[in-house]
Length: 568
Image (cartoon, rainbow, N blue to C red; front, side, top):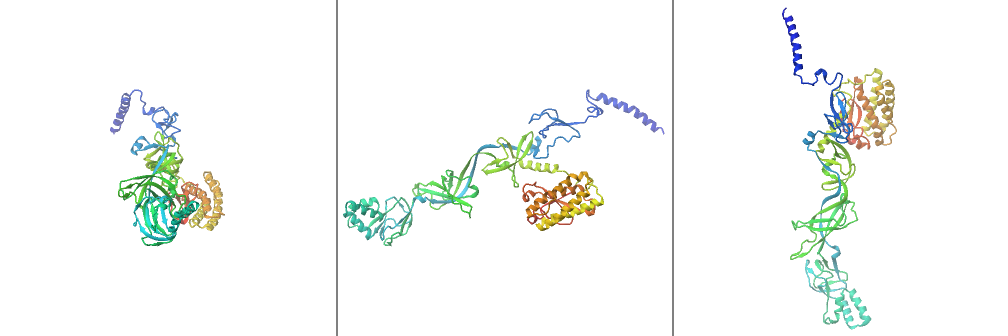
């Protein structure tokens, strides 16, 4: 019985003593917990830039980018959103850990090295076929093997031709105009001007005439032998001048914007390892081959003669490096561009640890740079290292920024409570929306138009049943505006009409939730809808009745099972 009074007396002495000691130990000027700021004031969290929300500070000051005064953000305030949209804010620690590096977009030449393959051919303008001008017999061959080197005017063969021999004798006996006429006839019979001028001193007992090489070069074909009779027009020899060679290679369609005459080309062949032959493109064939989707380009190469012959042989296989160049264009490093889909994206340094997502239109691609047609300006700093990590952070930011009506456990604590009559209208609406979705999943245009008519009626009945629910008025308005689901002329226009209706219907049903076994439904999402319906956002949703296998209404048979269930 004496314990309780003793405890009370002890507490009465200890509490005031403890409070007094705490007051003495507290530093001068420091507020007590009861004096935090002032009574009723909120706690200051940080200061933030309204224009550049990723700029934050513990102390008042100005934005390091725009110079605007920082705005105080108190406990309970949402602050300014720095995570949604296309801007990714990072702390200095994150930047260092991700090793973020940037480079400037700049106007500069765009260079590229194109590897090509082709053949070494002879210069066709220095290729001759020597034929018989008159009938006769090959009496003697001065060169009787292919590959022999000849000089221009060097004798190749001795030809016995009665008609040519008779014309030579007439020339020696005639004078004046008759001799001139005979000289012209001898030219037509294959003699050169030098041979004609030498006829007066030609021995009379000589019965043959010499066939001379029209150009210097290599004998690449021999069609006659000693003692062979030939007729007028018959091939005798073929001579090619290998002092200049042609390297010819195919230019494919995607490389045509780069190729032009005058470009430098380095040519190598397996037969001369380590040796580079350099020339320039002299001609691009304007005749495009529609089968190979290519045309031919020609490079002229000097081929001087060495002791063992010309270095580059006829019809050798060769590789080439074409040094391509473009005029001054706006470029960024290729490492800065992310192309995981139809879009080309870069992240631009905004200062203060923020990186903005930009969609680019690209032009030609060089070895290390790529041309930017639109989306950037010279001087913009683009991320060249760490951009994939930033892009992943941006995806997470967008995912977390999406509104969630329900708890992830599937509870319907935020769902709209419905009466039995309203539940019946919702049930009919779900059935109709499911029928429209199922028809598109089967690519059934007639079924879509039929189900669409029923869906329009169910939408009207739903709007009437829920007309007193002000919190649903905006979504019901969107459904009403998008419920024109009949009269589609093709499946593409049907899907285009279905898209706004389906998304509005999915949004409405997500808010309502599955409140009764008669209202069971599932909401699915496709992340590539813009590929099926150009101009719409990437993500699109649709409603299905529970128990039906997933059937993507945006792609149908092309990608029937593409999609993921949205947890309500």
